[in-house]
Amino acid sequence: MTFGLSLTNYTGGPNFSFTGLKNYIIAFTSPIFTRSLWITLKYVIFAVGFQILFALLFAIILNEKLLLNSFFRGVIFLPNIIASVAIGLSFMVILEPNNGMLNQLLNFFGLPSSRWLADPKSALGTIIAVSVWQNFGYYMIILLGGLQQINPCLYEAAEIDGAGALRKLISITIPGLSPVLFFSFTMSIIGGFKVFDLIYVMTGGSEGGGPAGSTKVVVLEIYQNAFQRFRFGYASAQSVILLIIILGITLWQYRQQKKWVTYDA
Amino acid sequence: MMLRKMKLKDKNTLRKSLSYLLLLVVTVIILAPIIIAFSNAFKFEADIYAVPFNLIPTNPTLENFHALLDKFPIYIFNSFKVTGIIVFLQIITATTAGYCFSKLKWRGRDFVFILYIASIMIPGQAVIIPQFLIVQNLGLYNSHTGLILVSAFTAFGTFLVKQFFVTIPESLVESARIDGASEFLIFRKIMLPLSKTVIATLIIFSFRFFWNDFFGPLIYLSSPSLKTLPLGMADFANEYYTYVGPQMAAAVISIIPVLIVFLAAQKHFVQGTMSAGIKG
Image 1 (cartoon, rainbow over the protein chains, first blue to last red):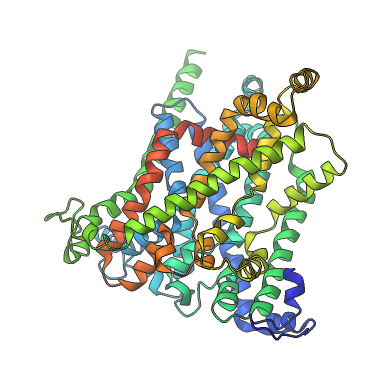
Image 2 (image 1 turned 90 degrees about the vertical axis):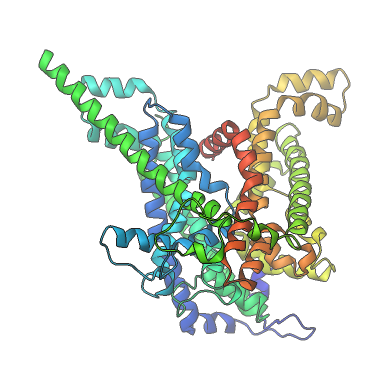
């Protein structure tokens, strides 16, 4: 149905007509839309990369027997239960460009302050950092579940063979974890393409995406076209493009997984 | 030999200290913004951006919470209502569908199940426009009913429940059938009591999701009297964008219920997430 709508110039009224692929042509020639695709892609690459990296690091640390283990687990998972709106509001205060707490902290250590969300150069990076803060705990818990499925005998055997920590990581942990890593990557990528709440709240609500459009991701562009300008046909075309990109990446990943995912640990 | 053992022990202590150091740093980074929000909620506007920053408010005040009194009680009520009904409906639809997919045999079952799974892959935003137009044409725009109906089914939850039901022995169901129990009776008296853990997981997942959901309410609700907490909070922040104190108070209020659920059910939260990942 989205696809059907994408071929029309429907704007919510009783009259609309079939316009063929015109919406797609407009989308791909629109600098705003192509830029939003590019911004989304940058967001996905960095957010997913750091989320999985931190998740893996702390999953490995917390898989050891340490004091206060479940406390740390709970703390790292905690941001995940908080609404993005609340997170966005709290961080906006901390990131205030003049006397915000983060700038005060930087100045205290003699480092220069930044304008964070107010500067087109740093706004997207700042939002990526907040989303990593919010989400990596979720993937950490999933990876931790995967680590606990790995047979400890494998590590003992490797130690007897004289394998070092890095060797064990590459030869046992990563292959043993690969199905769960694959799941985490897939979920994290899909989540990344859907990013909306944080950007809506932190960059100015329904007119968000600023400063200077530097954080305008695809979903925000779709939202603005559909629910503010009521260009349902055009927004549907954009949704279809987003859908194709996500399905394409998921399928590609699914094929790739045969190369690195092993199902018998 | 002795020397090697000593070295190994040194290395282990070093690794442990490094682990603790990293954990300490990450704990501070994660807790700091939450604690700062709590602290700011009790400050006067002028003190929030004071230099140097005070973690403990010098003149604590409840004024920020007073500012919320006329609007937030209704947002909180709406959030509880919508979240409660959605979670309840999702449990019913996910468990009954899970039963159909695991213990009943019918033509095309596996095919329909694959369609179900495929729908998890499709991002909600891709179907939101037709969904919105359907809701609008049914006259349910700007009502809780519309929002609740589009959220009543959960492909993910169905998948989770089905995977769990498959582990319940077929012989149990068979013997009940031979004794003449109806499918509904089997479902209610045998399957449901056995699946408390998976239902608890589902409740936690849905509660967290819909309590925090922003996109759905943003699209389906427009009257201030219908708005849920995250949406009301975002609106409020837009309206009062120069007053940070009340915003922080609102953020704190929105966190508290889900924080209580989290602390009470932390074990389930964590284990539910772990098993979701492994089964996926």
